Length: 115
Image 1 (tube, rainbow, N blue to C red):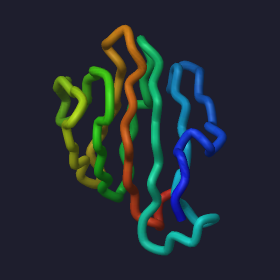
Image 2 (tube, rainbow, N blue to C red; image 1 turned 180 degrees about the vertical axis):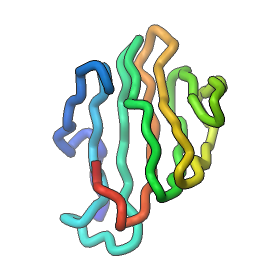
Image 3 (cartoon, helix red, strand yellow; image 1 turned 180 degrees about the horizontal axis):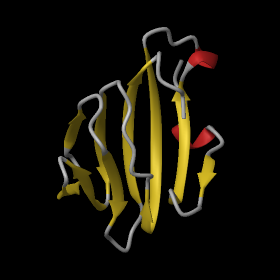
Image 4 (cartoon, rainbow, N blue to C red; image 1 turned 120 degrees about the horizontal axis):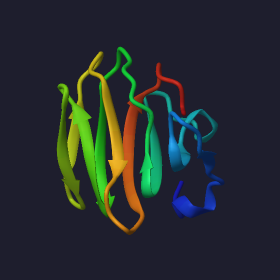
């Protein structure tokens, strides 16, 4: 299977917990994935994901933009080309601190919700 990630219709989040987030499950159950799901998040300027934790780890690749990661009780800068490991049960959040769209790819195990 090969396709453009933009061919997948995004789910939009825009509330107090998550602001300006367009999330796409680009590889999931529907595509036959058995072990991992791949998601692409685009965060608008000033937007953010919810601050949350869960029992599974996940990995992120920052594709474009500049942002910040909340982890271990602190904020750390993120930029295009960074890779991130978020351990299970670690509270975390991503926010876009630039004037451009922030895009990241996120991998989660198949036991996690697709979104």
